[in-house]
Structure formats: structure tokens, C-alpha cells
Image 1 (cartoon, rainbow, N blue to C red):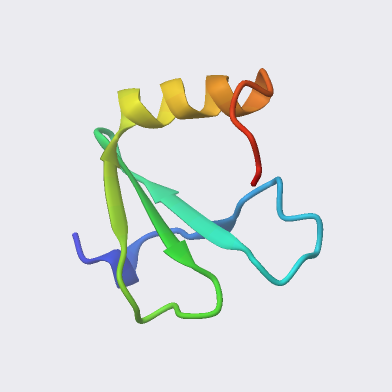
Image 2: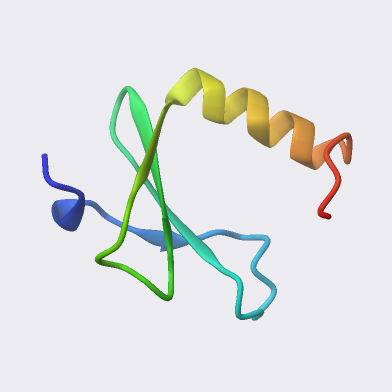
Length: 65
């Protein structure tokens, strides 16, 4: 499936800022792209890696700097 066919949604941590990402997923992968450059590069990670990343972010173990 092409990334243009995916159901993209803005990340919940955006808070209306300019530095936003959008995510889309299928059964096995999560795709991430820059909201300002929707035709640019797309990061593709496994669903498990994305879950681990989200846990780290939510627990505040990763810095936003």
C-alpha cells in the first residue's frame, strides 16, 4: 500500500505547534511524516518499535530537546 493511500492523523502531542508529525499504520508498521512536507520522506518502523517508543515518551524518559 502506498503511503498516500494511508489514513494519516496528526500526532496527539502536537498541541497546535508548527513542528508536527502525522502517523498512519497498518497491521505491522507505523509510518511517520512531517505535516509540512506531506510528499517528503516517510519513516517506517515496526509496530512493536513504535509501541516501545510511545511508552518511553509517555513516561517522560525521553527529552524533548
